[in-house]
Image (cartoon, rainbow, N blue to C red; front, side):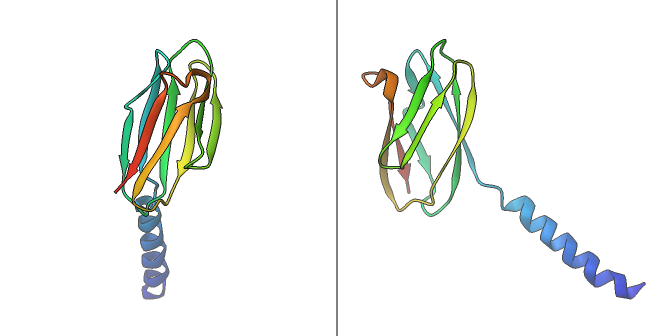
Length: 109
């Protein structure tokens, strides 16, 4: 029975570390052609999953040259956009279809 204990403990440790290794998630909403919140704070040096929910009745494009990301989001849809790991600093993003109002910034600290 003892010969099965070590493989079981190793498998348990691996499963536990995988459960804790999930990327942090940050919710971002598009409503009335604006991003809510306009400022997203994330830990520097960490990969983060932005979950963007477009609550408008028109498509929007999440675009950031600083983050090197571009994604069209259909009306009512949710998409995941992975960013990072980032150095400390500010990284702006816009809604390309509504640049005058859809603006935001990711702050890595």
